[in-house]
Amino acid sequence: MGLMQTINEVDANIVPKLEKTSEKLILARDAVGEVIFGQDKVIDQTLIAILSGGHALIIGVPGLAKTKLVETMGTVLGLDEKRIQFTPDLMPADIVGSEVLEETADKKRAFRFIKGPIFSQLLMADEINRASPRTQSALLQAMQEHHVTVAGETYPLPRPFHVLATQNPLEQEGTYPLPEAQLDRFILEIDITYPDLDAERRMLFATTGATEILAKKALSTQDLISAQNLIRQMPVGDAIVEAILKLVRGARPDEPNASAEIKKHVAWGPGPRASQALMLGVRAKCLLEGRLSPSIDDVLALARPVLKHRMALTFAARADGVRLSNIVDHLCDSIS
Image (cartoon, rainbow, N blue to C red; front, side):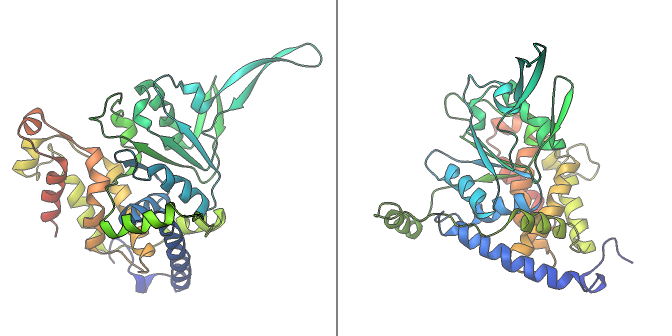
């Protein structure tokens, strides 16, 4: 028997569930596409991150509808959404919450915890890299463990809990690089670029007219949770598992089988979270596209958004103008 079951070996009851869920997800994707123009790939990757139960980092210059995308996702997926505008003076307590000293009716003093905006189902961390690393790190525990600890007390976060963070390119003034530990907690790094000509033309008419196109709810919270649980039950063939392992392990310069290019250009490679992200991501991708099991093409399509932010170039590679996207393409060539 193979490492994972094939679709024919899975309980037949899962097939109609997958088909029904796929139909709902396609409707949700279309609902987002009615508001966000010319960013189909970005919409798909953001949905993949949420369906995988993870968080996404959306990178692009100002004015490309990053904020609008996150707000639309909250509406379409039926999630309670809150927004934090990250600024240099933002403090960790502004995110997590803080304790205040109060006097009770019987004149006794006690601390009461006031929850911060992190207590939401969808947290929008807008321009996350404009805050200091100390403030950015306030999200670490929440993103991984789905709870926060304040003054020794642990407070669970709502379910589901997702962070969609937007980031300006690091070359811009007033930005700070995110800590490596936090980057690793984002299941995908999504690059958002300018829309094509036709999409921008449609956008002009849709956004400057007398009426505004508003996002519509397409899923309930329970629908989303059910889809996330179902994705974890989807079958993955042996060939896909081996491709994921080969891709991720091949990106580590200290692996015996790493190529000469990886050993020369990569300072450190992705950890096991990258394999987990690919395993969940390829399942979510194929379900979003109406298929029942992932393919090698799904692995290749998600290689860049999963791996790029989990790798670092050596000083010599940066001096030579090597880009991480070129490294990932090199890795993909080894499994395609």
